[in-house]
Length: 256
Image (cartoon, rainbow, N blue to C red; front, side, top):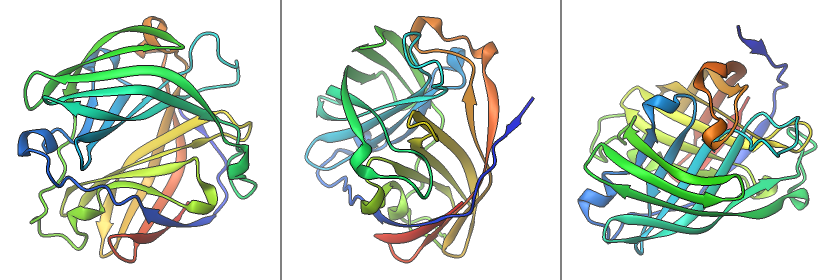
């Protein structure tokens, strides 16, 4: 059963974080995209290889059992060093504080060092995540879900749109865009709920000219992080509709 959340219309001007893959080997940059463990459907990772032997890792997941009882989602983010194809993230963070929507105040963002994450790839479509953080330690196998579109793809949007976007006025939240094909893009929104707890939603949208339109962006709730994770307990939550309009490869506008 889906729970509908009431969403007000609002606009943000968003700016890309200009992450480049210059200097990375083709095998390394090919690992950019979304990954998950099929046995843990409902959580996953967005990985983006950057320049200067670095990579961004963000884990969309669920709260630890000791977190605020009102918290339904969690996300953990870090930029790590790439050593022999392995991503090593030291001091990944969790953030909280701002309230969702027009009352968002970036000064309310509180960042907490969560712990360490490493990602090792055993092939183009498989790997392993090892983690040690505030909510527990362990490993999880991962399988590729998406591959970013080649820069030469024929589309009304350039593949350079793929990456991380944010609004400086609402620093502390952001959007991750993956151009998948000439007609489709995956969009993540990592933000907060109306109580300042972490929240995320995601969906695959259709590309129309310079826009990506998600008719349904969704999140999940009902389970917990790590060994307490139970995919059968996850309830999908319909967030609403998102539209991202790109003015260039470095600026755009988002409405929801």
